[in-house]
Length: 439
Figure 1 (tube, rainbow, N blue to C red):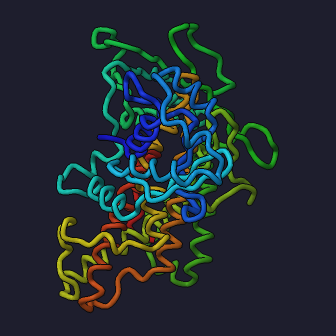
Figure 2: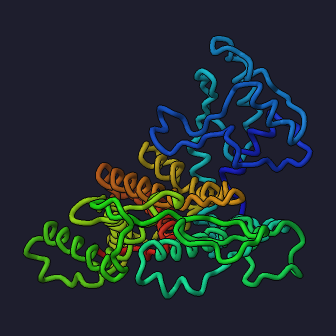
Figure 3: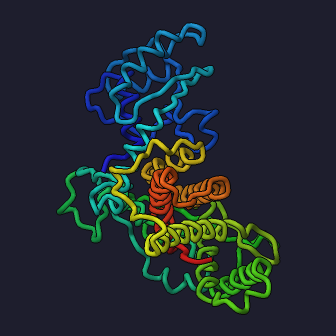
């Protein structure tokens, strides 16, 4: 399916560059997509320096419509109007433009974007949610990931090798979403273009085979924050450490109720998620630090999963109220007034995270040909989305009285939460972390 960020990227680039291919490299640094303080910073910005666009255009065609790239801020009114007219028929149209030094800041037409985006994510097709975020495959790009059979055995005893193992698994999931065609077997018979061979190992593991055709992704060590040296804990021991830490946090939060609740499954899920986040929250090329003797960060996984449970509980409660007759059944998306989603927090969730999820795949794999895979961006995405959901939940009462004039707001916000749930679960799935249904 088309990536929303790429649609906007191509519209903007096509305005300035008369392209021979009309398919621009979205991984270039010309554009910046925002995901916080959108009212202040705008939704998208791009570099105004003419020389940058001139260099970029050489790869694609001829530069054109350059006035907005050269005008001073005081002289931009007419050019901005022309730009808006040109942008009027875009899939994601521009509401207004602001020039700020060397950057041009774009504010999208929110109502149109919200309706377009939610229908793309949760539309009539039963497959729309399953397909969201999956890129169209490039018939000229193939990739094969070499797997080390010894890794499974040593990963249970060595946290650094376990980090390599789960990094390999996450990379494969990302590739399944991406434009790359992932080969299950290394065979050139079905390859009709570029073939990228990848191999992953830790920095303290020697190469097994010298092969110029294989690009290596090296993974940093897992270190003990107390000693500063490579961690000597086994995987089982670290799971016990994380489980104990999660149990103490649960006792502090729930007090006497803790012994009356079945927390075993929840604690196991939390500790598994915490270990994954601990090891993949840093850029893979950098060293990761475990939580030990109270030193290290422990909030990430629990905060993310707490807000996962919050959405699951909210949507389950809505369904319960429908069964009890308090609310009518959720109408079809086409019958819901999505223009009611006017709160800044709603736009933050939709543009900052629902819109951005497919682009996350591109960002993680942007430097793949250089032997880099930025899986740490998944954790950053999850934390940001969880934070936005938390703020929204605290500020906006979603399930209100069933008075007639309030029901359109409830329905619109339920669809918003469904979209947030979908991208949250997909991002968790990239890390092999199941959503939390209760907390």
